[in-house]
Image 1 (tube, rainbow, N blue to C red):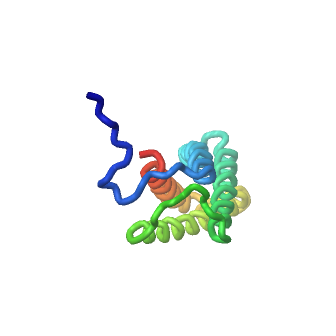
Image 2 (image 1 turned 180 degrees about the horizontal axis):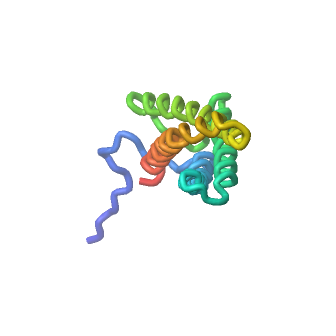
Image 3 (image 1 turned 135 degrees about the horizontal axis):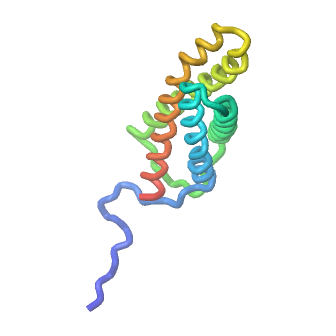
Length: 156
């Protein structure tokens, strides 16, 4: 006698949905930013070559993706195929995640400005060095929490 395979989980409160292309694109496109940020952070601490380029490319790449995604979602961009029932703790998560993303954007712009002027004036270099660990840690918090939600909702 053949047994039927249970497709749906009757204990789950929410059915798994297909990942929307925009969420998949952002989740994948941020992986190189993590590599660039790590290189820029480590090479900046050790005064290694290419710090300036990996930092600039990583920040500009992330700013482009973040601003595009936030604008897309803020101005009515629907995530097609997404049937997630976001309520309760997930609303709180998305609010906190959004606030962290805005803080990261501010830190990235500050890092670009202080990095550009750091060769000319010492005070810019000191601020650049002081802010770099904060950007690195806060950016990775936003990145990893976003990736975790993506994996949890769409891949598991």
